[in-house]
Every structure is written in structure tokens, then in C-alpha cells.
Length: 132
Image (cartoon, rainbow, N blue to C red; front, top):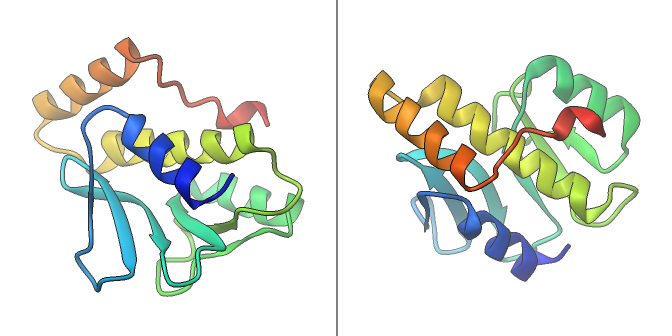
């Protein structure tokens, strides 16, 4: 996966917006105004995603390309390099996991959260990160 594939995949998820809220080189992807992944365009070697805390530790133990995210809560955010032993499908699974986790934990009111989960389900977005 490269930066172009990463961007296209993120934008393919329902209701996703991209923006530059921090500076002109940090591209942020949000759902319902909530950040679920970030990539630096000045040196796009990887991206940051939100992750279940137990899963985050497991991924860091299994894959050298997964590290605690710099400048983020290290319990909940991982930095994942594009190049390493994880396949493109595994990288997409981590992006989907982050997207759905943010909807489930950070979107309110409940009606909006349920609407987004329904749209994701209709689009076939599943949290299959556990299978890897």
C-alpha cells in the first residue's frame, strides 16, 4: 500500500472527510467530525490509527512495523508503516477497525452513531481486523 492507495481506501468508507486541521502536510481523515486516521504527506512512510488497547499491544508484539503513535495516547493509537510484513489487506483491516471503533466510541448522539453503523454495514464495512 502507498499513500495514494491509502487515501483512496479511506475516502471509500461512508461519510469520510479529509482535512488539514493541524498544518499543510498532516492529512486527517474523519467520520462525523471524529479523527480515525492520519498521515503525514511530507514523509508518507506510514499512518496512525485508533485501536482497541489490547489489540494495539498484540499488534506491536507481532509486527515490527507497528509502534505506539507519537504525539497520541499510546494506549489507543498505533503508528503503522506502509512497508513491512503486514499485507495490504491487513493494513485496510486496521483502517476499518479504527473507523468503526471511532464511530462506536466517539460519535454522538446515539441516533447519528446508529445511522453511521447502518451505512457502514450497508457498504459492507466489517471489522475483520481480528482475523489477522
